[in-house]
Image (cartoon, rainbow over all chains, first blue to last red; front, side):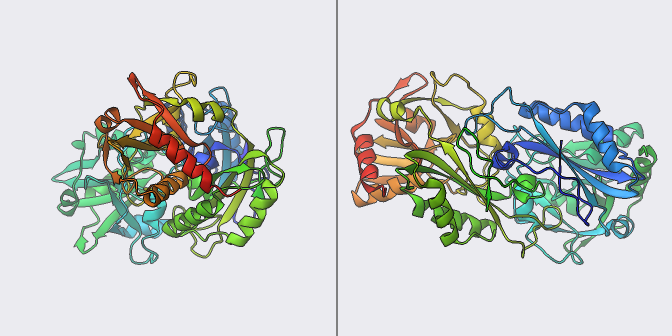
Length: 277
Length: 277
């Protein structure tokens, strides 16, 4: 394991990264960003499962789950609220873009402070803007939480005033609504829950998966499909989610207004009831 | 400057990378891979210009050119043949995807040994295969030599036997031929030189730029346009290029055969005559 240098911001331990690591050279790796609450990660099993699936798709040798669990537990212990970020890379080796298939993957675990803004956004909702930066279409990489994140960086650079907009909505090049810069998107129309299909682009978030499970258990009608901006504009309720923030109701998309919706509240409560911590 | 650990393979000096660096976290940076010949980099001015342009597009604070030149000269000195890789990242800082606009960029310089295979391929030509992995369409990132290179990694993982195929051809999702996994592609048809337009995807290589300049000076008719696989199949000559290998004639694309062409030879000689070392 490599840990980032610990400092007053709450970062990890001592080891540094070899610049030859393919994670830096090519973004050849994956990551998980996980919420710690009362010393535990409520959705750890989901994160580790997604990480293994991503490693499988990129053919990266995953770290042993038992080892990851031990290291993560150590860094989470005693933390009331914190963020743990786990990066897995293909490590060092190969010639140029071609990896050495026998080289072991590497992982890095870092701890960050809990974001201060989360509480108000969860209860009062957020305002969304529409990003000019588009998501590329690439089924080979779609859904994976990989380290090639320049599109999200460019999208997040489009606005600075966090008091005006708290998240940006990203479309792909076919004008399909895919997700937020750091969240997945759901809409409610006539009692039915919709979210974007992520087989062409986007990141399949852990909280999105949990919400799909909850919806299925509660027999809420569900559509995973191509979403147009028009669908979002005509929605009764809109929310964004990720495993750190949970569910943030959306109260505005540019000038369009939405209520703090009932189904959004119901899902947030159901998700909270399932959290293991 | 950060230098990679020096070892018997010919790597750089001592410093390691902070894992919080956005180059690792998001692939938030750029790189240049440069050939050293007799202690000098023949195309250094082109590389540094492209790097600055890329930094401008991603709004990364570039390192000072005079400083880069000094560090690169130090690492090149006394090297008959070597590769220098320069990585520039956005450094550390910001909250999540959003960068800290005041944070300084960072750079890393590494030295690698010269690839042994280059001579034969230059003179005998290479065989191309067509990659299943497609390049995403994204004008915001097209042309830039950024650190988000998972598509190239996946493409290069498609074949292992270097004696059978020496490079892979990549198409985008609209079936346009864009480039090789690590090279740009040119074709010759009826005395005219064609290469792919790179405003939607691909990397605008330094050697591609030099060849475009040479063609212009020699008044060779030139088309920079969308290329179809059919155009490549019907070409009289085909070659790939990058600033390290120069020009490699293509003698086969799957079962299609091409001669070692005259215009390819003429361009290779003209490029060689312009190299400053």
